[in-house]
Length: 397
Image (cartoon, rainbow, N blue to C red; front, side, top):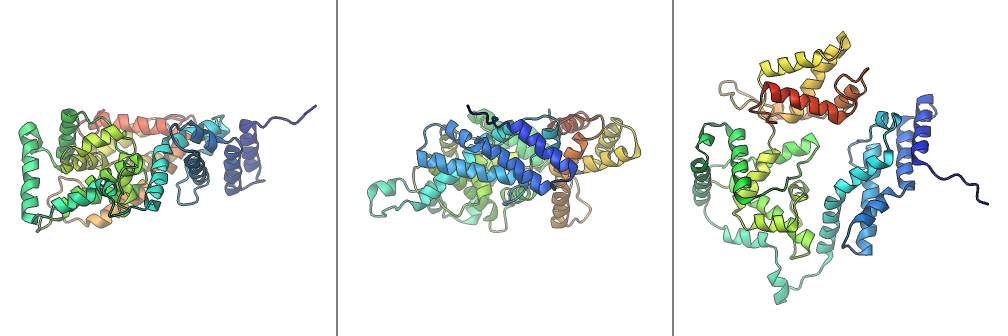
């Protein structure tokens, strides 16, 4: 008769957190043991088994990558940001449910990584006609685009004028508003419904905004180059996911990852349109909201302070709003035309402040009586509603 007690992940997680509270474990040790609970429950393997239409080798590779990501998200190691909320697990949240949700959302990206490795390992015979037919379009795009910078500047201007004729009100908008309006027009016109995947890390999003938003230089080259690189990233993503062609290996993963929520059919449809379409919807989604006025920020801080009493809460409310605005909004107002601003310094300051938001949200959710909600998502939703009510033009519902 087997009297061995069945493994219970919830009980194991509670025991680990009890030992953390008692001082028997430090947080690092506790997080490693919690990762072990998830691994012992075979969550990465189970999520990999859910994926249809892949080989056994790919399934094993996927399980391995998911396991690595899970460990990183629990412990904050391996280049991953720590995202497991210990307080929520202590209050009874299912640690395996958290892991399953996290890993399922990562499957498209991890499968893309696996297929990219496969495509790089594949040998392509340049004398083979079939291989030539599947060459990545990005190479042809650059070959066909060997025109002068002046021609590109004219074409780019013509593209903008087409938008202005479709939506005359765009002429009166600042750059962010105009770009987002143009993207909405394109999405509606061509039924582009798939969302883009924007990096969560403030520094990565800052890079993406800077890259996609590059202005045209005197020769007309900078903006065109980035438009074509955005288009090339979509083409490379299709090559990786479909196994068609030989994708370029030098495209930044932050560009390649933009398309992870697209289906192949949606991506193929977007490739049929001119490159500026993919670039416009990518830039619009990556762009931060315009910097709110001091009055809007002051009103948001006042409203947040009303949720609880005490000097500590007042100080926390101000820090929370500041971090949230830094994460969601541009560093410099688009209406600033008089003051000389060091944009690089302002952006670096914004990124540093934005990186404090996860800790601010966690602290808010754990506050006595949970004045803005019991979960970090609840707190974020409250702040989003707050800014929508005070500044609906820049924070639409």
